[in-house]
Length: 318
Length: 318
View 1 (tube, each protein chain N blue to C red):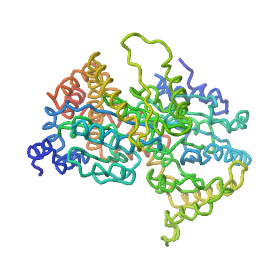
View 2 (cartoon, chains in turn yellow, green; view 1 turned 90 degrees about the vertical axis):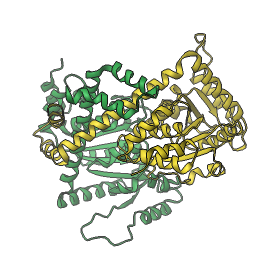
View 3 (tube, rainbow over the protein chains, first blue to last red; view 1 turned 45 degrees about the horizontal axis):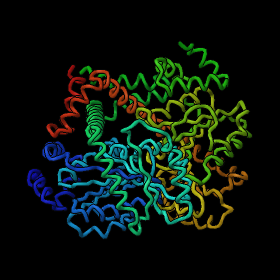
View 4 (cartoon, rainbow over the protein chains, first blue to last red; view 1 turned 180 degrees about the horizontal axis):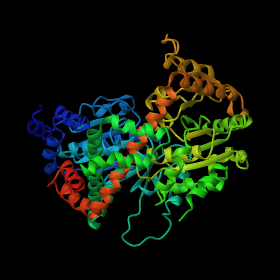
């Protein structure tokens, strides 16, 4: 058994091995998971969580790394959670596309974690918020949650951050992709990276048009800024940080920060409740019961809804 | 209220509006959903379900269309379900990237349906099997389930078909992508499309190597064939159909077809059971209860696991 209070204490002191250990406990649904979560609860709420999303190739990893540099210069402790829902690899190791992060690997004020969610019960929705809690409790001032790729789960993760940054790059035709992925609904700050390339202005204009930023808004409404960057050279990154800080201040002024955190926690609690019920369902019936019902479904004797009702019956009546 | 028996009768006669209506009832979780599913149950099991997946740009839509043509030539009734988890659009209408399908739009022996799953309760896992049931009951001999994009859910859908076709194209560097998405574990038939392009042989060789097809296998094991096609010109499509028929015959001979259908139905029943429990959770507590618990989580008074337990308690005890 792990000595959870000591581990939490060490994580608070910024010892990376302790943070790594806690995330592993949380990711792996260890028997001590609940003890860990209970110990972390009173220590959370201090971190500012920034989600970064965008199509592959827009430079998310480079941008994240540049943001880390900027926040470190401000003396902030930074956590990075790189979530890749399609990867079977997980852990603290620096993976292939995390290479750009390696410059921060020896900085004790930065904690970087790659998280694969494939195969997890409930996927992303389940695992990422728990890892964020660990980084929060460990004293990170800023947590950058970078999602690799654009899909339903990535958008979900990013949209559950305090502030959501959507990255685009010129000439990737990602206008339509972005619209499809619902990315235009979730950005609080938009970044057109690789702005030294042809078409950067056109991308920014198209984005401006799609976001309806030209239209009038109610006074006090947040108007998502579009920032042009060349992350690989660190250009425009200070402007991104400035936009983030403005959004944070705006949220605090309007109560939006509390609303978002409440929304995030509600989703989290509901997801965990469903996970619990799913586990109890498995405990109660075992696979055999479900298989027997499935056999009748395959034979056409039973429709799947009636079969599901029978499976649930024992749980709620027993 | 819809007259379900009449609608099912009309769908069996191949009337596309009846099929569309049934899928809409199933997709929309209408109050008559259970009546529909019960009516369909004894009529299902006749269709051969083929999943098609692969990265964007490999030509899934073109390949699906070419397969439709081939099966129509054989006199088969064909259903196409194009599943796009990132799209907010759904319905029977031919969407942008479905344009290549339009040649089949006037063929009464073909039913084409686009299905968006974003925002659905339980996503793909919930909705697609129900739509497959409708097409099956409506008398489709073959159902082609095309998933747009490569992600966890797409792989899941495709791997739940009777036969799973994985498409690649030369020079897309999708070897690594494919490996990441777990695509190399799920293909029963591999297709290298756009085989008239440079690098087609290299892609096939790389695939052959990654799949370990050179290694010896137990006699009787299925050895996934790699078929080269130029779907836009219909080249190689007959070979794909032949590979599919061979795989189907192999599965029937080895009992694999029944196993897969049983596995699919088990997953379906379990998913529906969880969906039911989730709905009951919402009924029992309403959003307010979850929000109150979430408020305590945000305040650090409660960890999310304990909150989830409290949320579940009323359901299983009450």
